[in-house]
Image (cartoon, rainbow, N blue to C red; front, side, top):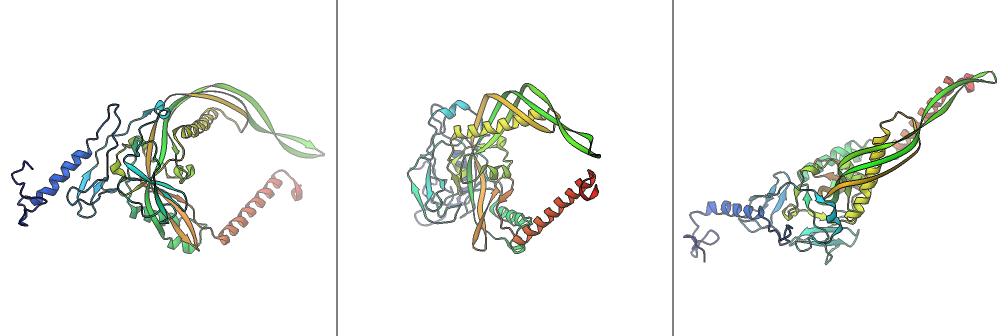
Length: 404
């Protein structure tokens, strides 16, 4: 029994069908109560968020709410009610956590597998996948697979679907090697919002290196009565130590979007990412990682090695690298397991599908587009003409061939 003096009015009306004199305030009050519930996650004894969250229902009408990228709030598309998602800025996690099991999110999410392309998508518990966001087929089934490690951070969608579609059309118009009709009339289809999984790493690296670099110089001499310029190489050894801090090395954890595509969509402002809340998934899906944290860390070490080499070599003046060896170790390593906002879709052209990705954070677009054979042929001819021109210029400069 309710303690309210107006308990005879249930759902805004009493048993006789009369409206409550305070019904205009009921929805607002219930919305604030729900917002307060969202802002107060239940924590276990070890500080983890307890996996007891379901689909967020509208406090006014009971319909499912979706996360609105433009408002940055949960929105009921049925009655327009808005609810804040209150989440703190995400925190870096100690690297040792990657070595332990636990903190899984199977209790609050479920996985759908596409029988056509094999993609695995994670939805909030209670939501149903209608079609695969990658290939568009409706041949998808719910699985009983655990969805793995629960993310600790999310970069929410801040670009709306309509803006993403407009950006794809502008991107298509800039594809100069594509057929003119495609550039002018590209039609993005099957556009879906997907949170793609990724790991970001912060670390301090100490490197020890050695190698041999070279600088070219030219020597002029007479051969058979002719002046000849020869390019020669002067080498010098290098050796030393170098230290650097690397912030937010971002590694894609899904095989549905390549690392190259993810790099083209950056930056995602992971430093301002929010702590993971299931409400952010409302109305979207999340990709399941196919590379775990340790595999992503190994990939990150490859990025660190390449950047260290670039940083070390930038300290010297040289023309070519004869040899280079570098060893390094990392310390004070932390990570975030993130969900990054990406729109996926495709444009059709002559019975082929060309897939694209749009950052749900900054609106950048990357993907594949059809190529015009005629334009490619003209470009090849132009390139050959440039090569021939450079060859004649080189021969003239060195007094060779007809210029002797």
